[in-house]
Length: 409
Image (tube, rainbow, N blue to C red; front, side, top):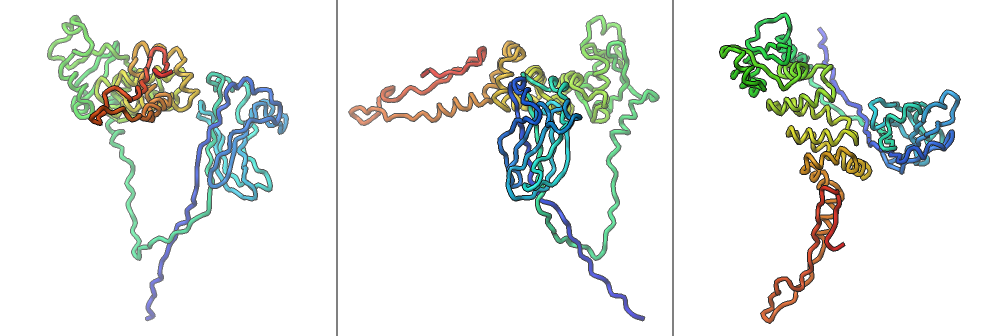
């Protein structure tokens, strides 16, 4: 009987090498750029991605490529490098809008050297994206370079791995909140609504709320409320929270997530306060994530005050970074009514914003760069204190007026 030879096995992986960058084109005084005519465009500065030069073209009055485009603004990505061929993926979006235009294409300098869309946004929709008559357009560019092959090892005895599905523990715990169940051993009375819960779950997931549960009717109640409930009752009355907020809080305790209907900024603000009160660190970060996604000049001062009052360092840091992300944004925030109120209510936060700005950092650098002149010596060769040494620059920080000055001015 002939023997059967075992065939050798080999394998390789093909992967692409990419280079990515996001470039932001900000058009200040937008209303003064709205009469360029069909085909007239505004250019960004050159930027380099994947070894090639690019720039953004923005057409405020349309590209002029047909009647169907006349009601739209256009946007194009232009390849500036010559005698080259580039494969790329690009995406255009406004900083105040989550919708984006995405595509993958190949550009050659000899042929069409631009890509984009003639129908980026309707002209009539643009005012809602303007902030202080300024429009920001972001272009995400990924240049796809050459492919790389890499040989991989192949086992002579293939192993079939059993796949483990994602954990459904939170789903099962969430089922404990079903209205069909009545096995809860504690009731929270929030305004006019009752919410059942389990002391064991509270003990594991939210000990601070569990403490309230084991010391009945002490949370935000008056003495009349306390006399109305027997001492042996398993009911806790909460009067400083709305029922919808407590429902979201209870759901997070059981499932470590929020329902879709609760993932909005207004609910996140209320839940941030609850997370701080009941020491729920992950829910505090969850709320901070929601509130940090779409900051604006008008809302950021309210958000940073909220973060400060409820001890969310991460959200406060994100707000400070947004404020100091550009000179224009910083100036707009510092001149807003919200910042005036912030200075009055949280002056330490207003100061922290300034201390993280370029204004403060440059002032400190100038102070550190002042050279000390050699001091005059006495008959023992020692320097006389206070003579021959220039007065160092001292910078005053006037938080009330957001003015920085040197005593040498």
